[in-house]
Amino acid sequence: MNVTNNNCVKFGLERGRLTQFSTGGQWLERPGFTILRFPVKVPTLIQLSRWKDFSGFNVRKAVKDIHGAMNFDFCPWANKYVYWLKKPIGWVVLALLASLLLGVYVSTQAFLGTAAILAVGIIGSVWPWIAMTGIRGSLSWVQGRCEELEAVKTTLTLENRWPWPAFGLYVEADHQIASLPSDPDQPISLSMVPGLARSQFEWECIPGTRGIYPTRTVKLATAFPFGVWTCYRDLVVETPLIVWPHTTRLVDVPESQGTPNSGIGSTSNQIGDEGDWMGVRPYRPGDSLRQVHWAQTARRDQLVVFERQSRARQQVSLWLDPAAALSSRSIADDLVRALASISNHFVNHSWAVRVNIDGNWRVLQPGKQGKQTWMDRLASWTPESTSEEIFFPTAQKGGLTIGLTTATRFERQLSNKSDSISWIVLTDDGDSKSGEQTPFDKSMIRIAGGSMLSDELSSQWKRYSQQMGVSSHIMSRTN
Image (cartoon, rainbow, N blue to C red):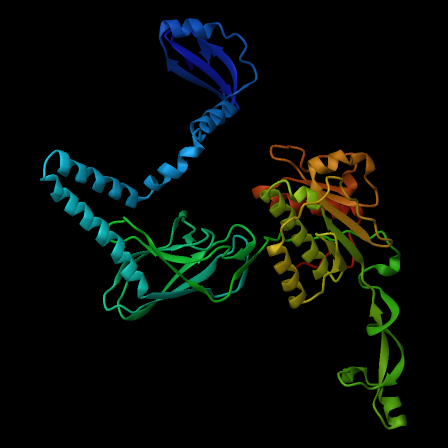
């Protein structure tokens, strides 16, 4: 479609950037190309026509700068004098003073308005306070732990000791737990709480960010009937809600670069409950009857059991760069999600896992209790200030070492990278290099953060495991 208009200024936008500018003539629209037309006066056209070079002009940045200028506080010293006008009670007081001045200097009939405004102010301030003095409540969850983006049932229990109902109540807390998924910006509101009754209200919340909730005091508020003054009552939180980072289901496990005897399914000469028989010993409480050596038991007239070999475990060390996590909260959350996915994946496949997120190494324990302790730690972890000099973890002998960082942090230290360490690199916003080939492609995974993290981590991890050599003993095992 051809667009022409000699009485307007036209801006040609392609992928959000200004590529063409004209005060007349004819343009041909094409896919991905947007034309904005603004009618202006002839003198303005003459001035705009003098602007020749518009190449590289970023419209989004210009809009952002204008928005920042319009929302900039040019008089911060005056805030303490005018902030009270942001509350409804401030306008009520201002109207009251205005009506008094009108009654004194203009007409006494204005005192009728003064009386009405005074009544509204008194009733609107006293009634919420009276209503909240008779309300007691608590907030709880059916389950104390959940993952990000997992629905959890929330229960609000209220007891109204007054004989009349309470209206216009709402919960003031973190929007992660006190809002509906369909409208996350609006708090949970209650139409009515019956008098002399104990009521329960239930809803499902979907926390989108890891953490321990609530992060601040949960309050029940009301401004009924006029919204002039808001009164609050603290709610009791029986147990906090621990939100774990979201984990991605991974399939393959890379082969360790250690000796063949360290593979899953192989055994060592240490005493254990698996593998070949190594000898006999007296029975101990807790030993399985299947291990009883009946011939030796009959000969010695006491229970004798076999001693067997123990199963060897592959080792992996996971290190999260704390300096990279300091960049922003979103980057820290993405790194933690990737770390949680990989660490749990290795633990589920009976690897000996060491992790380092705060400068200290810790060994993850298998089982439900070990996973709960580790995920609780990740839910509450926040990066601490550290040196800008990136630290390279030492690769352990006979095991696998994986570091997690961002593209910016990694590229600064690319020349010092060790080939014995594998890296999971979180690309910056807008970086299209995730998943592409790199000089260290065999031992590196490049993934994008945000909503693409789960899909890219799953696909790139499978490629990485296959290139490093997937153990044939565990290819068929899943989480």
